[in-house]
Length: 231
Image 1 (cartoon, rainbow, N blue to C red):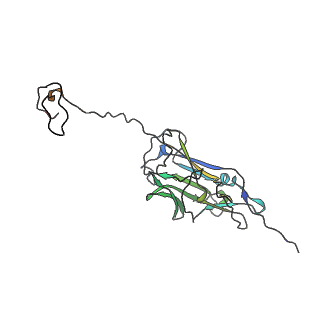
Image 2 (tube, rainbow, N blue to C red):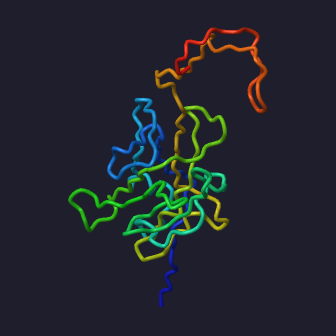
């Protein structure tokens, strides 16, 4: 007899990362985003992709290669950042859910981001060239005063599953559930001036030293001659 022991994949210690920006959020997108960003006209948008090649870097396949990545259609629980802290949007905590084969991060009834899997061009039955698309659809709460270049890095690992050629699953977050090797960098957006003035008008004509009634502003120090207009 020949006894052959199995081999299983392991984490490599490498990180697979994508980047999206709040600056590019827009209700004109399809699907419509829930916030409107102020574009910084750089190369990043509110959509990013993770290729199979990028994901393969986070694992050591072992003898039973290749490792196949897919969406984790059982994703649940809190969405965390790369340090293990809960992520919020408008103060609402994000959690993982699945809808129609797409993994979503939702908060307060809003879809904040989605992760979808698309078959590679011309190879619908070959998952090794599939593409995973991340679409940011609403704002992420960043640290106070992060500035326009501030970022928050989310742990996307719970949105994925992986197994080798004979079905052995890869524990993508490691034995301590703290490796978080698949990540999404979300750049902050900040307000800007619109160019429109805000203006109010007062008139000296209505100044009066008369004693005010209860709850009224104090007496003025001059008396104007009213022109009986609306001001």
